[in-house]
Each structure stands twice: as structure tokens, then as C-alpha cells.
Length: 365
Image (cartoon, rainbow, N blue to C red; front, side, top):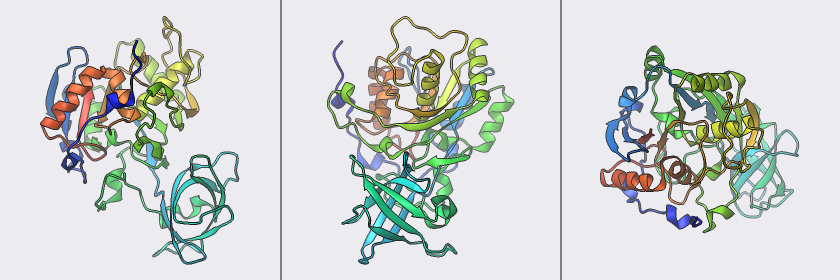
């Protein structure tokens, strides 16, 4: 089989189709329904999702909550610094984080005073401990981040959104609970509390996983041969309650519907673990799931889903429209078929759908 290239996943998007603000109410966004078997496309509204889900289905969302990861600071010289929290730093002291930094001369040993206007927080010091191979920094904070982050930090928006958000809560899903992401699980932004209640009343079960989304979700793949790409690691958890719900749904003949690519990545990682493999392992052909489709787990996943991947846990998915040359576009192309996704994206552009984080949605059945 011909190896796929990153350029195969490129497309031109008119800049005016990049959504700069969320639509109100949440479920008023458009919904492109894609039948991956027939290739048929249907233009609906997100509220119409209720017509496509049925009793016995299980809807799985990502309950990770976006943290106010963007900080501003001042160097001893008076120069301005921007610090972007990425993740707690492994193998370092508890108060250290891996961060992206903006500013000159931020070498190990430099101390930065973090700004926190309008709060009662005392002095906050950020000390550069080390520089990583990728160019990020390991930064120690005093006091620890958990004591002041929601006072001093800003909820970050993706780099392609250029206008401020009036209500930062609009970049959170209504079911976000567990802090840890630096970007939102945007497929879930379309749900309202009322919609979730109606789904329950109609016999659709709800369950949640946690995957803390990192900044790499916005980055295009840099190598041309996608098999050479080393995907970023993200921390995920699928607890025993959700694992039981998924396994019971599968045994009863119901569908598991993932809300977003982060949920797909988590569920498919759990399916590999159920088979006795690590999430990033290649599984030999012919291996099928037993009675247990997924196993509970907590830890990092580096699962890279691209065309040719055999899905074991997910039957349908809800997703937004993704950046060109991204691993997320490769994932949905693996799920629906690249030809189907190419045609769906071309149709969405022709029909002037809104793209990316605050854009419209797609339901792939």
C-alpha cells in the first residue's frame, strides 16, 4: 500500500470561514451528517442530533476542563514575558511545569515575576530550571500553581482566534469538571444542559472520560511521510464505571458515540489495553476484542490514528472541522475514509460552514 503523505491532508480554507466567536445558543450550530458507508451527506442543525441517537446508545464526552494557562510576567531587566503552561513537569519538583515562553534571554536560572493584577495573591516567582529539546522550558513556581492560577492566569484561545472572548466559560463544555487541559474539547461545546437531559430521557446513556489536551493539538505535522511522525503524549483516564458502560453497550448491541477526537483516542487506547497491548502498539491482523471491548486505565497515551487503523471501540463520532495537515484530520479520515472526508470538507466549504474551535460540527455515522 502506498504510504500516505502529510500533503495528502492539506486543503485551502477561506480565512473568513474560521469562526472567531461561538454561536448562541450552543446547539444552534450547523451539523453535517456523514454516512461513512454510503458517503451520503445531510445538512442539519446540531439540535437535530436527537434524531440520530437512539435508546441503548452510549454518548461519551471528555470532562477535562481548560485551565487559565496563559501568564504574563516581568524579567529582572524589566522586559515582558509570556508563560504558557503546558503540563506538570515529570521528574521534577511538584511545583514545576513544562511551559512555552515568549521573551528573550530566558535561560536556566532566570527568575520572572508573574503579574496578577486585581487579585489578592502575593508575589509569584517563576524560575527557569531547564530548556527542553523542543525549546520549551521547565519552570518552578513559588507558590505552587494550584494556589493562584485561577486568579492570575488567562484561559487561552487557539492562535487562529483573534478577538477576545466575552465569557471565558464559553470555551468550556457544560460538563467540564477536571482541570488540566490547555485547549477545549471543542466537539462538546455544542451541547446544552437541556439537550443532555433530553438524551437521557430518551434512553441514551451518558459517560465520560478525561483526556487533558495539550498544545500540540494545534500543530500541523512537520514531516511529509506521516509514518515518521511522532505524535504528542497526553494524559488520559477511563474509569471502571465508564469501561463498564461501554462494555455493556457493546454486548447489548448499542452504539458507542464519541464526542470529539480526544474521546476517540482515549477509547481506542483502552481497547488496545483490553487486548493486552500498550496504546501505541501495532496489533497484528485478525485480533478481535473479546467480551470486554475496553479496559479501565489512567496514564499517558501516544496513540496515532491514521488511515488504515482498525477501530475497535467507537461506532460513531461527533467532531468539529480540523486544521489542514493535522493529526486530527488524519484521525477522522481513518474513521470515515479519506475520500468521504475530502468530499465532506469540500461540501462544508461550499456551503460556508464555520470551521475550527468555535465552528460547526460533523456527525459521522
